[in-house]
Structures are given as C-alpha cells and as structure tokens.
Length: 243
Image 1 (cartoon, one colour):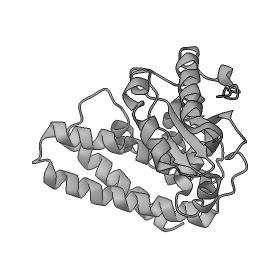
Image 2: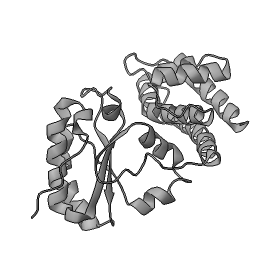
Image 3: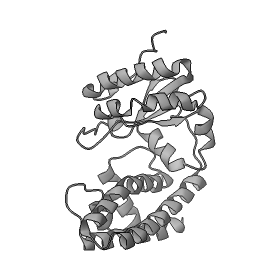
Image 4: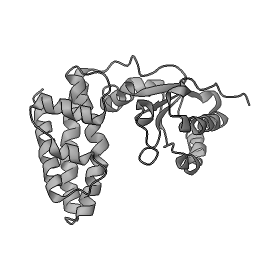
C-alpha cells in the first residue's frame, strides 16, 4: 500500500495534536485508500482556542463516495482516537457539500469561518451561501431551541442539575446561530463566542444574560438562569423573524 499524502498546514494546529492527527490520517488511508479525498479540521483546534480538557478535534472527512464497510472499519478505531482527542469526523462527499448549502448553511458557515485543510482540495473557502437560506435556518434554530427547552423542562422534573445540563447541551447551537445572525449583518469573519454575543447585543440594543450564562461551562445554572435564557432565545427568535 502506498503511503498517504503528507498532511498540509499541520503547523497551523496545536503541536500536541499533530502526532495524533497524523496517525489518524495514516489509518484513514490504510482503510480507504484513494477514496479518502480530503480532510478538514474546524472549530476550536483551527481557531487556536483548543483546550484538551474541554474540546475534541472536530473535522470533515471528504470521500469520493460513501462506503459503509469502510466507515464501519474506521469506526472500530473510535475509542483509540477518542482517547487522543479526535472526535468522529463528519463524513461528506463534494456533491453533498454543494447540495447542503440550502439545508445546512449554518453548519457549513461554521466550518467555512474557522478551518484548516489538512489534505485534499479546498472545499469551504469559496463556498457560496445564500442570505435567505442562512436567515431561514437561524429562524428555525431559535424555534427549535424554544421547543427543546420547553420539552426539557417537562422532562427534567425541575431538577437544577438536569436543567443545567440542558443549557450546556444547547450552547454550541446557540453560538452557531448567533454567528449566522452576525453573518447576515455583514460580519463574515469568525469571532470568539464572547465577541459574537457582544456584537449581537449591540445589534439588538439589549443585553443577553441568559445566553452568556448558557455558554459558561463553569458555574451551576439556576432556575433564574434558565428563565433568562428562555427569554433571550424568545427575543432572538422574534428579531430574526423580522429580518
């Protein structure tokens, strides 16, 4: 078997991750060979904010075609690479990326704004997203979050621990949707979460204390925090609904 193509731009990622990432790519190539078309790391590792105690490496594995047997074999390596801080990658084909611009624009925008292409062509830099699609998904995400919070409240038996866990589980979606709102207002570059919230607060001319508390992984969240978050999400939903 031929050696896999050398990873490019590896020095743009944290040094501690370079060895595990290289080993993962070697294993991918052993299993998939030329079917492995590209690999893109995004999120905290690409943004320079990676904390091994909090994050795992997020990535997109681009294949020429989806082969379930190959994916199953790679899945057997999940525990091994999970211990090294590498999460199971999103698996896409070039056609899937192109055809998902109208259905998953926020997810694609998140990858586009903060990524490092380690192997293969550049799939995300020039990806064109329609404002109408981004706005619609922002609207949908806020409404889904409201439904999720109502359902979670009923299922939690009002236990603070479960409500706190629910808020933390929503944090990634909240920040992703806020970034989408900023993108609609012309902010096309990735910003840290704190800056994202601040700029959205400026746009709305009001503070978002519930949102700020939801993305803070340190303190235990209280009932008042949950109510504040619900109020903030309601206001955000109404705001983007009018755009």
